[in-house]
Structure formats: structure tokens, C-alpha cells
Image 1 (cartoon, rainbow, N blue to C red):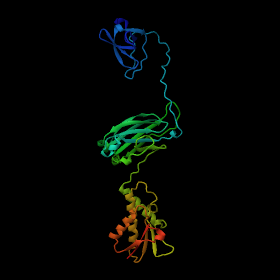
Image 2 (cartoon, one colour; image 1 turned 60 degrees about the horizontal axis):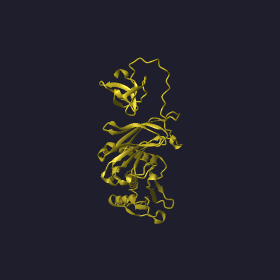
Image 3 (cartoon, one colour; image 1 turned 30 degrees about the horizontal axis):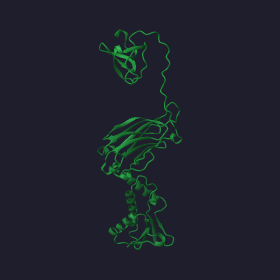
Length: 359
């Protein structure tokens, strides 16, 4: 029987459905047959019948076809194997621009305060396929947490992690390359975006919010918006101090807009402490940073006119939440006890200004 079957023969099974290509012999009475899915199945030789002389076209991800050990006739032109039909990508007009996001969802939303665990998703809201690599920083190196290809207009699950792993995610990075298959497309630059995750937010229920991608509340971080990679704004204390000093220098050289004399009473100076009057750009500044800058201007003006006895200065702080007003009153009570202060004219400023008289 063995002489009738050889490696490379296409066989089918007599007593069951199926068949495949003989890959090797196992003992004296068995062969290993590779089926259409690429798996090797043992079969008795007596239960196999040869149905063709040539190698069967079996798609296997594990090995390439073995050559026949017997001389075969002159090869005949073969028709190309039919390629699996690719699923057509539904494209949108807005999808021609890359919009890429990372999303974090709590596994048990009711237990966010306890840190019950979290899931990470990658969102490709564009018409492009993406090669991407998702990493976290560890000391001075990077560790890849997930890499692969994501299809257009698709979101995929990346990983599940516990609260003990949150510290590892303070610094993350996503690198990606965008392309389309079998059609022309606009060239997109390779992208690498580093972000800092505020891991404290993962313990706060209100930080997980309604979003466009999930029925559940999620914390969504943009990676690319309208083809523009996110650029994290990191400002050190030294850079902040330099920016403030630069503003002071510019104010000295420019027309005075902070301290203005009132047209109706030249003895009263008016100082507007609204942050929009003091700084052209507040990007990257926290509320505490802005409050400190406003108080710095307050001290600067009082120091400048400390020798002008009887000088009246109106500090406009606005009503708002009263944070700046309370901070000014605290400074006057503790550091400027010698000066007299009161609410400025209600008719002109409402409750939004304090007048200080230099003593």
C-alpha cells in the first residue's frame, strides 16, 4: 500500500469527509495529511485514496509546499490562485484627514474610586490603514505594549491593565504610518506623539465622560486631530519665570496699558488685574499660576507708589468666584496693614474692584 502513496500526493479519506496533501509518513501504516486549513492530520494509509498526481494547493501559514519527490511531467501554465476578495472600505469626506485617539474605560465604572481595572482602545477615525505602535516609558527606555495594523474607521481593543500598572502609563507614545491599499492617496507624514497621562484622573468618576465612540463614559486622548499631531505643552518653572520677566520687559517698552490715569480724577490710578489684560497667551498656565501672576502685579504697583502718600489706586479684579478679591484682601491685611482699603465706586465697578489709599 505504501508504494501507491507518496509525499506530495493529493488524497481523500474513504471513511470520512476531507482530505489533503501527504506531507510525511508516520510509521508503516500511517501518513500525515495537510488539510485546507494548514493542519496535519494523521490517517491510515488503507483509508486514503490518491485523487491527483500533483501537489494540492493548500494555504498554510506554517510552511511552504514541499517539492514532489518524483519526477513530474513538464509544468503546465497554471491559472493564478484566486485572491480573497477584500472587503470594500467605506470612505467619508472628513475621513481624508487623520483623527486618531486613545481611549481608556473603567472595567467596573461603579468602582472607579477603588481602581477596579481599565481597558485601552485605539480609535482610527479616518479612511486610512495605520501601522502603529503603542508604548510606555520606563526609566530612559520605551516598552511596546501593542503594535499592529488597524483598518480604516475602526476602533480596536489594545489591553486590560490594573491600577498597579497606572504609574507605568504616566508617559506614553504612539507612532504610526498611514496608507491605503490598492488605490492612490494623499501622502501622510510618519507621526510620533508623546503624552503625559494624569493618572490621578483614573480614580475620579467625573473624568470619564460622554464621548462619540462608546456608549459608556470614557477618557479620550487625541493623538492626531485633522492631520495635526498633538503637541504636549510642557512648561517648566524656569520657562514660566522667563515668560513673566519677558512680559515685564515688553510692558516697560510698550505704551502703558496696565496702570492708567482716570480722565475725571488724575489722583486715582486704575489697575486692571484681569489675566487677559496682563498676558496675551495663558496656554499651559494653571489657575494657581495665573493667580500668582496677578498678585505679582498687585505687589509691583503697590511697591511703585509706596512713597506717594495719599495716592488712591483702584484694583479691578472682577466679581467671578471672588478668589482674586479674597487673595488681595489677605495681602492687604497681612503685608500692607498701613494702607487703607475699601470697595471702589459701586456705580463704576459694581463689586468688582477694591480701592487702596497709600498711607
